[in-house]
Length: 219
Image (cartoon, rainbow, N blue to C red):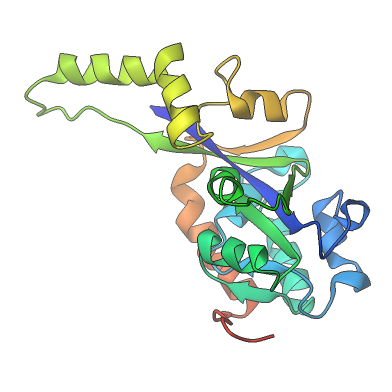
C-alpha cells in the first residue's frame, strides 16, 4: 500500500520572471521564448515517467519521448537535485524550474524569507505514489505492522505526513494539502498499475535527452 503521493510543480523566482510568463501547459516550455538556458530540467526524469503512465490524459510514452526530444532542443539548464537547484534560484542564479517535487519546494519555501519563490500546478498535474509499505510474510509481528500502516492511513497519520514530510499525504485523504491542490484539476497518476515501469521509462527519457550531464557552475 502507498500511503502518500508526490506532486510535481513548476517553481519560479518572481523577481526574475513574472507570473504571466510562466507556462500554462507543459508544451509551453517549447516556445521560442524559452530556448537557450531559460529553465532548469532535473537530469533524473522522475516526472517524465509519470507523463509516460497517462495515455488516457493525452500523454503516454510516445508523447513523453517526443516531448523529451523537444525539451532537449530547447537547450535547458541541466541540474541534478531539487535542493541544489532551488537554492540557486533563491540566490538569483536561475529564474524557472520546469518540474520540482512540491514537498521539496515547500522545504525551501520555509527558508525563503524574502518570499521570492512561487509555485504553479500545470495540468495534467503529475502525481506518483510515495511511501510504499508492505508486511513481509516472515514478519515476526505482522499485526503490529498492520496497525502501524493503518495509523499512517488514518486522518491523524496523514496529518503528520502533511506537516513533517511535508505535504506528502495522499490525494485521496479529504483535507490533505495535495487533495486541495488538485481538486477540480486534471491529474496524471503513476500508480501501482504502472509504477514498476518507471525505471525503464526514465531510461527512455534520458536517452531521448541525449544523456545530458549536470551543468553546475555554468551561466
